[in-house]
Length: 620
Image 1 (cartoon, rainbow, N blue to C red):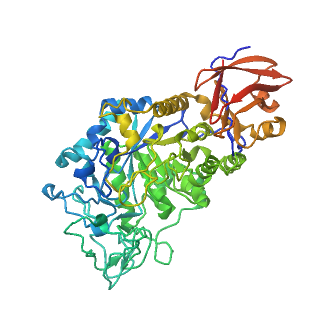
Image 2: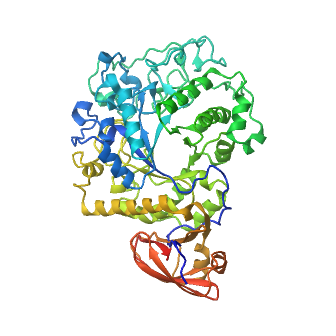
Image 3: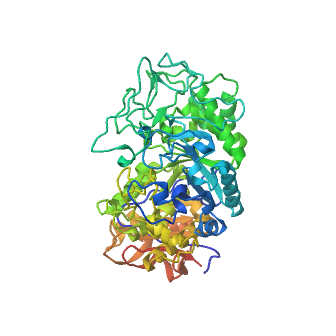
């Protein structure tokens, strides 16, 4: 017997288990295919300079531009299997480069991290980073052209919004008519007032942190503004919540905390959202807030988001969302959805006890699945975790599995190929298969991950293992793919080319497969019990929809092969309506052939898994 367009994906994973099948989603928010987000650090993407001097200037180490994302580059990103590009570091943040000729004030290196500045210390929310423009006077127009080029390639555009804090030297030169700067109308004589944008430390003067471990601003490079002083009277609370007029050097000293009407004692100066609204849609949330008098900061950030929607941006990644009240997110995100119901809203929330509140009450589409799946898979990749735990993670999140974005790299995490992670990019291949196919959630890839970038450059601020977001630097493996802006991988090594080919095949399968938006069931524990040579370095599960049937098997072991009969339990065979007999399988990654034999309502597939290999088998 044959089933048209049926896919069986076999993944044998080596250190953790699978979760039970979540109930099929009926939400209108669910799409017919999975989403793949490509996070790219905009400043670094097109930089072909290979000098990589620690604490190097923009002249020494170079910088990428919006223009580097030309039609060829975007076409190659699209062909990788990408649906959304998150352009990281776009809003105008504090920088060291001198742009006074363009009417932009200089930023003080005593409150700027690195030579290029933190993308999360935004200085002007209505404009973009002048470093990224060929002509800084036309930087908004250049970004607009990039948005339009991205859309022509049928990809969506995401940028960051950071509602928890802004740069210490915020200066909105590009504010629309009627928009006042953050803090412009604050009563600075008091610590707190509901409509103040900042919190203050009355009768104090801000002091630059006491530097530790030999740190010097700009790495000790000469700059007339480096004087261990920054004028701020009275001092403001620091972005991470420090209430000291002299924050610690490990605090987010380059930023100041935004006030959303939360009093210093933690009580709220606004109406709390009733619990019943967790079950209501964004339209009900919008109606709840629309006639209320709310803190000024709420309106400021709502207007920023709506401005960028009008500009053509399709969604946002919200930095440190859990540090901002969930009621604000209800207001903010319902306002966004009223303007664009399809806007993509991704939030950084690390506390699992808050996940459901920020999804249901805060109306976030997606949260980072960092503490649960990422941390578990990282342990497996490093050799001391068991695949059995994957089951625990998926079962615990099954009611919100669609909302938990999966990733193995982002700008905050160590590069996979870094010695401090696993030291070899290929070790992530089974983990990537599992992460990308185990749920209906979006999958995210960080630029350079697909060619094994190891983050080993000593850029200046911070330490290697993570590609620097604070400095001007080249990204060597990625630059070999860029190939002098031919964007054809012409300088990649053979191993790097094979790795990118793997990602391309996997991601293109992911965005085309309807089964990955359907049902899920682990078969890991069944095989641990019934298959002699199957163990905790292997992981397996099935996915299915009306049109596809998938079996996924991955081997997380870098040294050991597995040869066994993978068993498909009776319950799965019944749900798939398979009769006793033989069915042809085709691997979606490498096109190899296999067979599924069903006897007495139990399926068997002969599996020979080499180290770090996976199968995604298609029932033909």
